[in-house]
Image (cartoon, rainbow, N blue to C red; front, top):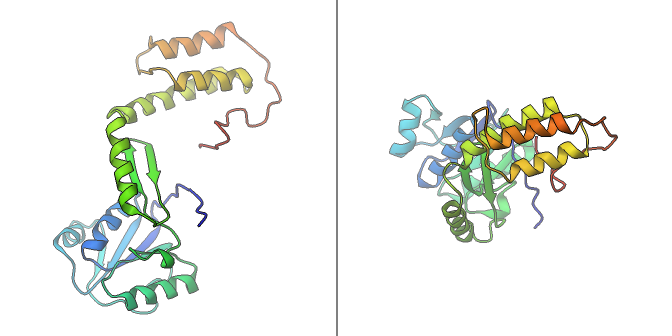
Length: 225
């Protein structure tokens, strides 16, 4: 199965989860982490999900799923312990053009929830296309142990430095090479940070006219906005 890896903005987008048991909890929290607007429909909810509803983080409708519940939704998750209900949710989602994930039922999914390593704005997502969630979880743990805890802070400073470079340097091959150099060096926030000094010195000592080089900042073929 060929999957397209994508990081989707969900802020404010309406998302519905059918089911409020143990299968549902981690999916709900993943959607909340992405600032989705989450509605949960289930006749009963476990304590974890009930607490989210009481705090106002989600909307909880205490009833069974009914046809039409996915109207106007961006995505849906079917997480009940009743396969017939999950398939009915899938059928409505497919008919309505709503992205659907049926938990632990790969053939009835438009997308999967990956195992994710997070450090601030850095996210490393791992998917096995539903073949082995256990392997994805093991790889996540291994990467998590290898990645320094302050990587998110470092990325924030690297992003600040990148914006400074974009203001100082014209669009050319030299700027692209400089950005790659900086991504491999320690970056810090104070004015005399070695990487920041190097970036400013490069701009002052290597003035160049802009070159007609299309998409020179593309990193290894990726377009990272």
